Length: 232
Image 1 (cartoon, rainbow, N blue to C red):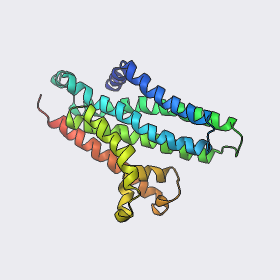
Image 2: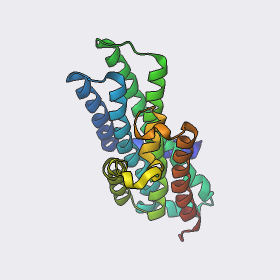
Image 3: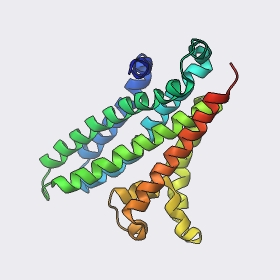
Image 4: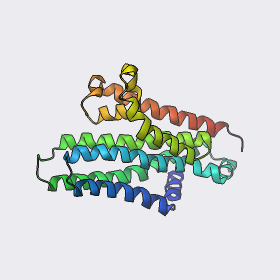
């Protein structure tokens, strides 16, 4: 717990980064409802699921790679601390900030949607939408922690992951030639968790959850391997 607390503090000290992610997330949701909020809470959750990738990438890559870039990891490992513990403490730290900001945005979206005329919100829809958003943020943060630890840098990881999540993944999901292989795209699996209609109808919910967990395990496994084997 001390390691986790220390890693959370390291992220919080980057006040500019935290403020930027929070401002972009909250401002995007606020703007959506200010211009009318067409689609209500469900559409807001779709927007937040995309924004979750942004926060997850920034916080995850920073948590996973900042110590390596600055040379601090060498000093931490030299103290005899378990390298596995040093690595895994970064994951809940990245989750704490990513999911904390998203949770506030979800609550704000629910309040705003309830204030607008239209169909009343129900607990089931709210739960499904919130789970989709939190799953998107948690997966991206975990994968970026692992990739940043693997590569030893933050910037390239943020760029590649965001380009894939926000650019390539939506395009790949529309390619019929890929067939059922599209189900392996993380964004598609997360959309299924969110209960969306269309392409993901045939993907079973347990399979979607398994795909998300497999991506997280692959990213974290690669990062853990590098953390335990790299020379200091």
